[in-house]
Image 1 (spheres, rainbow, N blue to C red):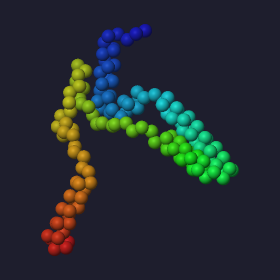
Image 2: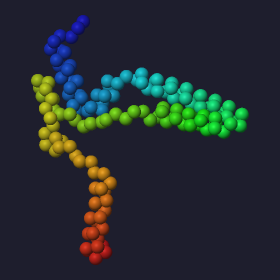
Image 3: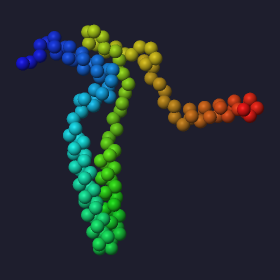
Image 4: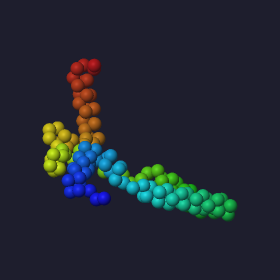
Length: 137
């Protein structure tokens, strides 16, 4: 039995509210696990082929073949454990009663500037100058 028009609108509002409040959770709930299974199969095949190349390289005294096998095994393990990184964002906004999304208000509306190593070094220099000016405290 299909949903009524009202129920579909309410469901869409709930989805928008979830995506707005916690986009990481919404992304987790929407994603399928098929990519992970294929990733593990491919990495397992890479590890097995790499192990075979390593053994064949050691048995035939061809070190270059063993090195290729080791690199392939290592790449398979890295491929299995380190998946693609997804951009994680904060709240998109606030969902009104009619279902429209308004931008966040106040402090959350302004994106924070990311301080690189320059900000850290600037703070260290400032602390150093304060110590020198206070007489070594």
